Image (cartoon, rainbow, N blue to C red; front, side):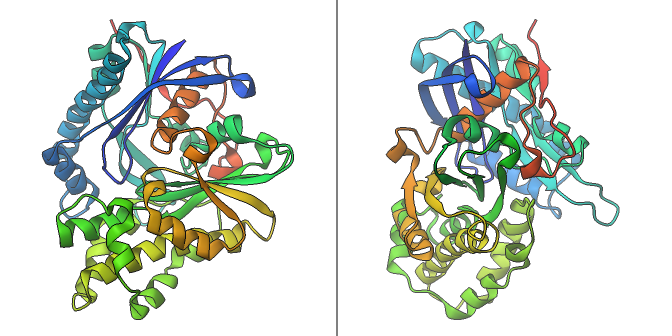
Length: 379
């Protein structure tokens, strides 16, 4: 069966679209990547997403409109990856879309209950592409007491489990998240959580100082020096000591928080700020491992995915933090760092169509295993 996975993360660096051939289900599922592309999100829509994610700038009418605008963007990305492979989208068994996270509340506070919101209207995607669309994956997990994140651990269990070695899969998108696969694990042994910021704070600093979307290869960070006062402040961020299961997002490490730091340290050199933010991403990953992973498992390797895997300076900093544990990329394993999360949603969507669970309660805190996602059919 042919399927497309769509992923747009908190980094807003584009919509990843992957075309796969997938057969079987569960641990017997076989997935083969056929084509991949990343489609740019227009700057005007990026600006609307940022406004919707910031409490002081959000409005109900903006979120309502953006839901349909993003549906068109996701549909275009699906059509583009199909065009690239010479496939008619009507031939697809399904499209699995993560959507764009607008707000995520893992725990109730004040008048707000635990909840999450991903937009990018699935009816628009289904109508434009002429095939079933599976979307809104996070909400069912939250309905049974989970945090709705992280979602990729199930796919990583299917693809990377080892009988003899404990492995960590570290994604570095806008937010960092890790999946730990103990040696010879069952699905109930898998655990995962968000480690903190990935590229989000680095990207915001690059936009402010250099009018660039990201620090290519970590070049700017490589020229900077660490700001000790900022390091100490970041090391004391309370998220690092919070016990898993835990999840976070733009509401904690996004533009408002980053701009507070930029204002506080405005007299420092711009490349030093980028270097310190890059260090914080590496430190937050390693510190979470030291607290919550390494006391239980002797990791043989950490496999990086997401856009941050291409940041050479970040990889070097993480290797220094982790010492003798090998830090590899998806490319070292014959896969794609950029396509990894989009492929994960192909796997999750496939389980949904087979009426199989694909959340991992040990990762999300859910009380039970559930089938994820809502299915929208075309005419």
